[in-house]
Image (cartoon, rainbow, N blue to C red; front, side, top):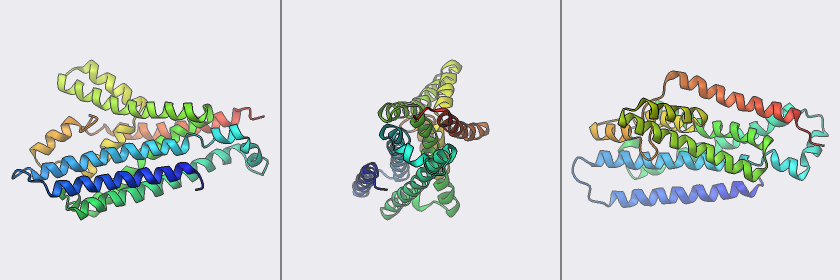
Length: 269
């Protein structure tokens, strides 16, 4: 809680929410053609939701990139492990603490994001049911938590700065995979579509956003269907295969196991 990274994260989040509120303020004072207000609300909500998901994932990387690497660099790990704490407890303790912080930050951000939209009367938000709100919240948490598992492993293997750069690249790669899949669907090219799927397997974080989007933004008319098919800013608006849910769960667990195994074998003398 004393780390300056957390303060920076809070400032960036507040600035984004203020900017989001400003955009909605201007939208409410615009003259929108008749019949287009629902589509405008949809696109505004999708834009805000996508950037929110990206922001939280990147901030999670900032917070977790040095969680173990910095302890190794400063020698703090020796003082911790001199106590009756095993290396397994050390890694899982880091994961648990960061997971609690990630869940808390994402929940506050999610509530404020929806509250601001509701204050400005976005139809896409005011029409949400209780189950959509709860389901969207649970799904909203999955992307930063999955990013956390990967970044924790990277913190065992790499220094803080290289780890942060690598994790950001892997995360962005998932968005590129969504765009590649979208292009493959539009061109009806199985090769391009398969390339996008492979990229999404390496970086499945955008898929988690798509799942959340499908819960919070179900299509309401033809124009919104077209917007969702286009995949918004990063492509890949189609719902993933049920097998992808299992894959992502195994993906996260595998990197936790690799982090535990890697730290257990690491020479910290």
